[in-house]
Amino acid sequence: MDAIRRIVWASDTRAGRVFDTVVMSVIVGGLVLDAVVTLEGLGPRLSRPLAAAGIHHFEHEAQPATFGSIPESFWWAVTSLTTVGYGDAYPVTAGGRMFTAVILLAGIAIVAAPAGLVATALRRAGEETKEDERS
Image 1 (tube, helix red, strand yellow):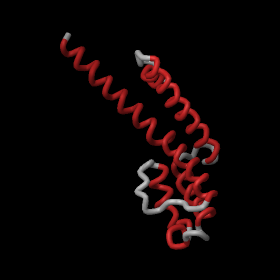
Image 2 (cartoon, rainbow, N blue to C red; image 1 turned 120 degrees about the vertical axis):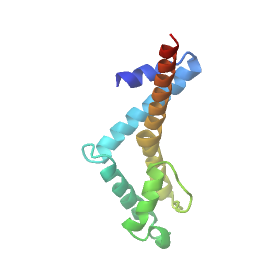
Image 3 (tube, rainbow, N blue to C red; image 1 turned 90 degrees about the horizontal axis):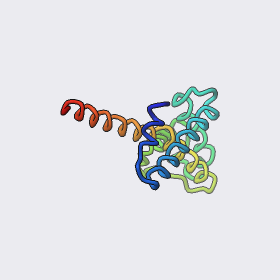
Image 4 (cartoon, rainbow, N blue to C red; image 1 turned 135 degrees about the horizontal axis):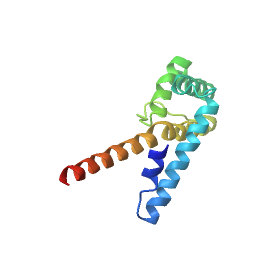
């Protein structure tokens, strides 16, 4: 956590700090959401099946060909939680759209934002290594 804190607060501009604070809030909120929703933090093992079951509940009557069963809904859950979203399966009901908004935010918090932080840390570590080699 100390490494993440150093990355977030290393920004020199006020706008950068505001953005970093928002990103950190999304990460923390996502971690809390994931821990609560997936039964004591079992993570992706349960978040994808729960997402598939949830979207199936909201969409199976409106789109039986796409969300006819929970296994058929699993494709949507995987692409939505990993923030890929190919667009081949999407909700059309109000309940499905609201559920999707929650799942997309969780996906950003669980996958996308931490991946960006890791990439930033690796880039900065590479820059520090180059500076050390020059000295």
